[in-house]
Length: 343
Image (cartoon, rainbow, N blue to C red; front, side):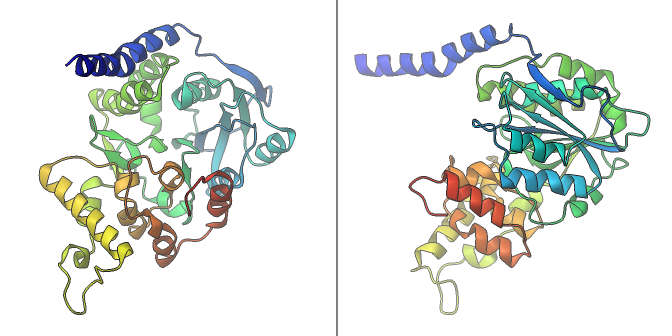
């Protein structure tokens, strides 16, 4: 009995009280954490602008990040590169300067939303010729398909705000690894008020709760429309029917462990759909996303798989089957970062 009470008390302290206290302390830190800006003067921008957030503990910019930035620039996007690393090695700085319209180096205070806030403040958007504002980060690998195809699907006549994917976990929101905003949104009071309210936070759970969920909800409340390029319901419906069938001659070989985990995960998706229990699209629905032409793979899915998605060993096979290119930077990063796990 005493052990159970102590366990509940520790859980409450660890998951509720300490994060709340830490969050309250961090809220009083200054959101201004830039230590270096390039160029010192005006940052020249084209009509499409992206504030891209990066972090690397060693101050490096790895191949998969350069590939992503290069792809944005190749799609006609001006990139402000904001690193939370506190410093960049000289070779890394030279590499991003060769690609980007501007670079901000800041301390890692406030995570991605703190960096996005400072990036948007530096650029004073929208400018008279701005047609699209993107925010992105390095939490995904790719693109493994040309970005032009993705950007061409963003239609501000159909919706004011676009994300690649949408989540119904906790509350409805567009997932923030890449979002696109119309000039009307970026020039609005709701946009200014949201970013003015972004403060340093102690833990990522608060980042998600207050800002990733909060951004979509704040814009919805202001009357803006939000849409995902790959809607959640379409992904849930897009399952290989063979994986939902029992073994029969000529059907899937359920004695094969790889086939078995594919079927188990497909049934999990269907079970959650039946129970109206939301899944995380970039993790649980990765196979459906790649089949639909999604150009990214979530880094944490391949590196850590924190939600124990059972069928992710197929990622390379599925990507190649759907015409993916540019897997080399992904494999190079996995070589450097995987521990006690095969790719």
